[in-house]
Length: 247
Ligand code: MF3
Ligand code: CO
Image: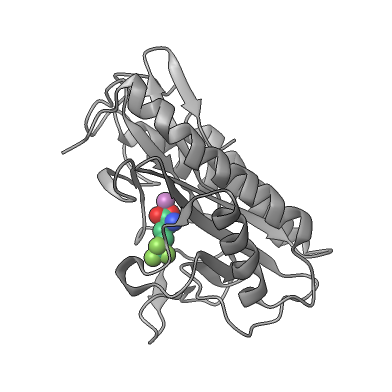
């Protein structure tokens, strides 16, 4: 059941969402070749705690870190560790902060130095998919209009949309109803009410959409080994449009 937020609750969500936004920018300014994914996670944890928030991912379902750090063919839920970032990698960093009784959630994919033309386009198109997905979004929009627009933009660019993971509602819980797929048919699904707070998070693959989870139970890799990218924001559905809280 979707939990609609009051203006007072939305006001309380602004702070954790702003911390997510600023933390992603903080990471973007520092991430570089030679760093390990564990060092990226440490940046995230320190930033979130320094701002009086709690990293929601740490311990969530047993996840062992504050950020998901996913390199190249890892699409989401990469566990930070000893992997060293190299020039030419693309790295998605996905993080959540909890403060004021609410969560904020966002992700960006960063380029490490100069990347291939294919990876460069993939990162750009994945961001574009987010904005395509929310185009025209307002109270009363059918849920699957989002996924339909994301899918159209990805496939028009020769990429594919991950099916195994979706966006989601967010609030007092990190994952609330509804699931927000990145694919689907225009005009179908629930009509989103004003005050719904959702995470729209296109996960887009350069190759085929099939994903495998490694034996660690988390790391989601593209079955064909080709790169994937991720971009996510938390937003409020309004009568006349959306308010993006993590931008
Ligand atoms: N932040 C992710 C999302 O976009 C969830 C991460 S799973 C966790 O929904 F276990 F790392 F928390
Ligand atoms: Co999310």
